[in-house]
Image (tube, rainbow, N blue to C red; front, top):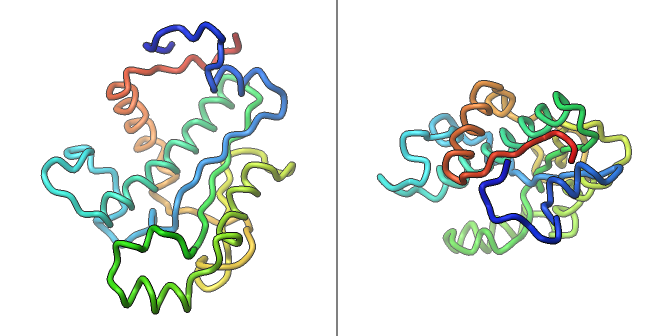
Length: 187
């Protein structure tokens, strides 16, 4: 149940999606969710990085959280027999403005040589959102050059992203922080 003000138009995205045939939720993550040990984790003792901020650790945590959320949402919807598909993706190493805060060498030299075009990086999320064969709980990304480039295929995310206990803990903390609890039954 939502703790927000009632929506007079009943435009709640979850209610609209779960009551619309063939609905899909596509969640964007990143290969950075697999960052080296210590970086790709959920830091429950300092979720908002109040004790110290590191952009790489924060980014890795957010992308792992995206996958934990996607897989937990998919499990909860299936457990409640809600016909709503949830899939996730990552764009590979894509030439975006995200690298603008890196040094000259990474931003200009490495990105211009190794990064794929934005049009290619957009394909995995489009596949997650539109492929009629998606059953839910899948993760799509490029498969060439260590998942940095290429056309989207079904790929495996990190073992930690499939951790049900971690996902449920994050879900509960998220409910507490946002004061939003979803009711997965049809309305």
